Length: 163
Image (cartoon, rainbow, N blue to C red):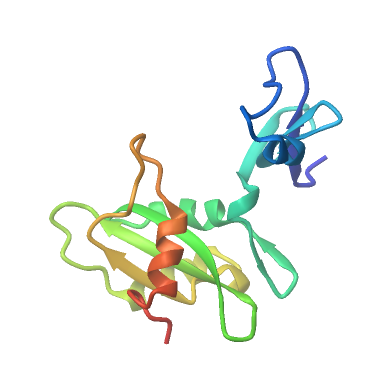
């Protein structure tokens, strides 16, 4: 209990597979169990808590970093309307924590130094974003979910250069 692991499910309501995509089905359904891609943990009462998505997990120097935990702290900072945290490999192949923030209407800017000081007071050092970028609007899909792969593409294309 309390240990984070991938959530897998089995039952009559679980899909049988992807249409005309046997490879994707084989990756997702193993021995009848559906691998959800969500990471979760059980508490002492047996309640399941979703921690993050497996594909969003950042691994830096062998340590698992959950972007959602960092995002929850950033959301509490006054003036921030939305945020997203991603991991991007640096020149030595380690993932760095990168944060993107969207400001609330009427907020012109947030001093990066103050935001970093706030984060340092609420997060372990290895979870602190190496870079914080302010964007007009985070890229989202039709349902409003932030497209983290687009943010990673922005960095890799040089739109947001890592110093």
